Image (cartoon, rainbow, N blue to C red):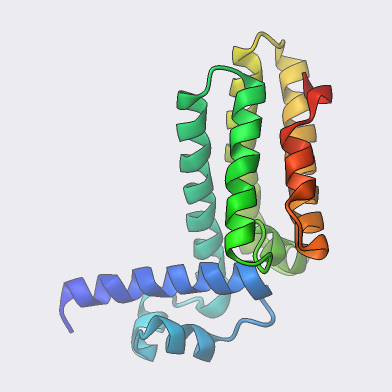
Length: 188
């Protein structure tokens, strides 16, 4: 196996794990399923992730969080106001939810809800991810002139509203909850 193949196997294992965790959570995602879908040899899994499934899941939560952070930072750079930022982000989320036929929500929440009480490693990865996303929301609110405390409070509220809307969208099989958050004038 070449070094390039080996690195591709690592990337494939992470991307496959992200998709499976997002859709079905930690307990329902087995290592054999990850290996089958990723087409990576079993040896590469334990070579790159000697901590097994827990380590792979934590690294996958970190990778998924980074992707969301990059999306949020691009929106931050291309929007002029907090209302525009929130509206555009919720529109993106609606598109992704519809594309998955409402089978997928937040790329890390399903795993975190299940694993935070059991895994400090996964909990830390999730906390770091949510903290990085929240920092973008705080900057966007601050850019609109809110004082630090109010920007912090609104960012926390927005995080909770978006997570709740993602859950409701999955349950209702509808983008309406996300559309409601995207149009929410009470934040401003």
